[in-house]
Image (cartoon, rainbow, N blue to C red; front, side):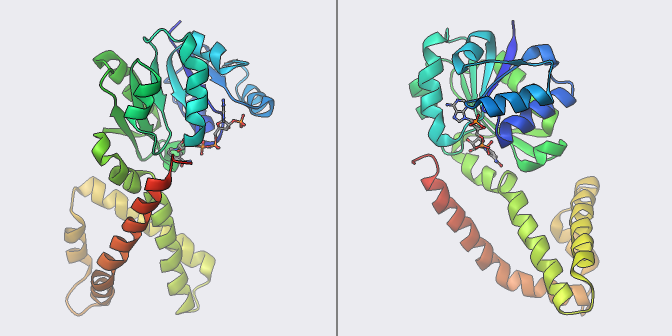
Length: 267
Ligand SMILES: NC(=O)c1ccc[n+]([C@@H]2O[C@H](COP(=O)([O-])OP(=O)(O)OC[C@H]3O[C@@H](n4cnc5c(N)ncnc54)[C@H](OP(=O)(O)O)[C@@H]3O)[C@@H](O)[C@H]2O)c1
């Protein structure tokens, strides 16, 4: 049967199973889940009584055409060594593991391999899943996987050379933006009598509305700034301060994240 399998029922595995099933991209008979612990398998069976739970990764591998590896980077090798002996080379392996290259994956499995990077906001069907196909992936496999992941948001194909920078934006970005929302709301609350919880609600709604405005109008950020930051006005004072300091701050932030990326997958 043409099933999709998810190995690893952790944060990402749970999010994917929920997204694929609740969007209708897969029906319960089309998905198989395996996870290392009995506890995770039982949690999955309790949440989704109609899907198949495999007792072992090999059992899943024997039954699935598309196999999604939702385990941590340091666990990938062990899982591949376990399942590759039962694969026919026709199965499509889809790895979520940050920092594990296509070359590494193709070195362990001589069939089609794709890397995907979803994001925390995929849990609500928003944001972009990055997709990077290996050289053995054919058109049909590519279409099937992109179709599956488009059920949890947008899908963007990227070359592996761009994957790290794209990941900083799409997958790390929500964490960065959440930190900015916290700091902006905190500063407004500290400088006034606005209660911190109300400041946080206002800042969060403002960010959501600003993103929606840019997307729906097709305007560039600079156009929006021009509309709000009128000469000598309040916003202009804020934008000037940010433009002076933010390039340096963000260069440092990106450099720190890139340095950390180099360490992911090596442990
Ligand atoms: N979190 C994010 O925002 C994010 C975003 C993009 C990509 N990713 C990538 O997604 C992957 C998973 O991340 P996560 O946050 O979901 O990690 P996680 O919560 O730690 O989940 C990993 C799961 O893998 C299972 N596992 C470990 N070894 C296994 C084995 N040998 N066989 C079967 N299952 C095994 C564990 O199972 P048990 O629970 O049964 O022990 C655990 O549930 C990582 O490679 C990460 O780089 C994460």
